[in-house]
Length: 317
Image (cartoon, rainbow, N blue to C red; front, side, top):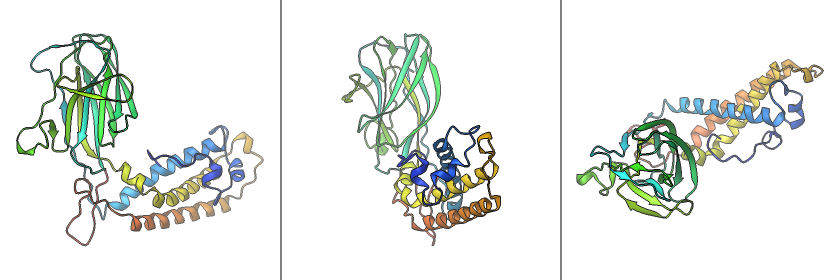
């Protein structure tokens, strides 16, 4: 579901207990979908989106919606333009959460670069623990100018590495501003939730970091936000059944309306289909309520706020 790893993609696997694959072949309209599997995957994705909206809505009477935001820019060149020469290494920044609460994620809203270079700068996001490449973005750099790229990415990892291959790319030095005083878990803390350090690494993997003061011309607008993806994925076994019934409901709704050329000879009992649609919706609502009763709220004082009443409250952004 959503960003969770899929266990199955084919219609023949997930819905055989309620709707057979052969039955679905009678409903697919080739003007809409190439085959049954495409129809099923589309309707299942729609079911997941609808489920998440209703799930969050159902939580609202019992839970407080809360998003933790510590917004700020990492990297500046306020002291002037100093050369950060091109080199056959990766330059960038390593972020690390100051807590182990898994719902706290990195929200990247903007990437910026300034250098003595005109051309494409490919920025990589890697999991700082596993080295896995999570995503990439490209900045069209212009020599001597700060170029900004709006992005919308959330990474739910303990450590996040953001770098670019500096081979042939001359930059200007950018540095991080750090908090001082007793609030800091280290001198590299940039807000109460995260530290940031300039790094270089060899291109490729493994990512063996060398800590430096220069971010290599990169500037990053980052916020620490409550991202409940990991929690929802962790309880997906509770959520799979309501999503199955919501998918079945949407398939029956589609079967009531689809009438492609290839289906003109298919006889359909619309009363039966409508009855099954209503049944699947009722089962969806029933299993949704069961899931709400069974889930356990994480012991996370940042993103899950327990009020001192008889109810338990949680944040869902």
